[in-house]
Length: 226
Image (tube, rainbow, N blue to C red; front, side, top):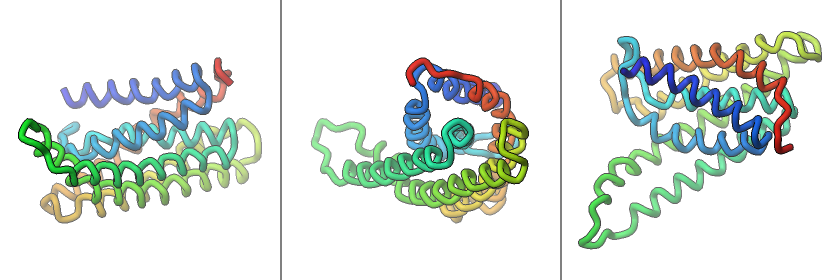
């Protein structure tokens, strides 16, 4: 069931990026970037088994964020790609502060969800800080490498697959190392931690390769609202 869900999520999220871009233009990419960051921070807390390996449930969403910055880089330039990174970074900060403010309220006698919120939001600071550091480092590296490869291979439309995959595979490795280490070191047994570290990158890399057709589609799209 997990494997089927993983494949379904790849199609759903990457397809949603393309559909939203077609319907609403580049602003939809900014919106999806924020959405993916927030939901990804929650989903990554869930440890699952995929193809016999320990992994987290947020891998596809994080991988979709790199597709977004690559589309923005390809269609609108470095400045717009960096803008998506800034938006998501600010929203994560607000999410961190807002979730902790909610926990500070004293529940009344009719409350039934506070204990569950403590479980979910209690891990938010560590997860979000790890995500913030991993995200800001890896996404800026992704944008830099994308345009570096573009310049080295000649300005134009050729070699899109190389700049898309090359920049993403390197930046995903950096993101995974920073995030998984800061978020989960000491919370899992060492063998599980190493499995999560390796498989998180593996599954992100798989999605990064699978998103290649999607960025070719995105390059041909003329958004309805733009």
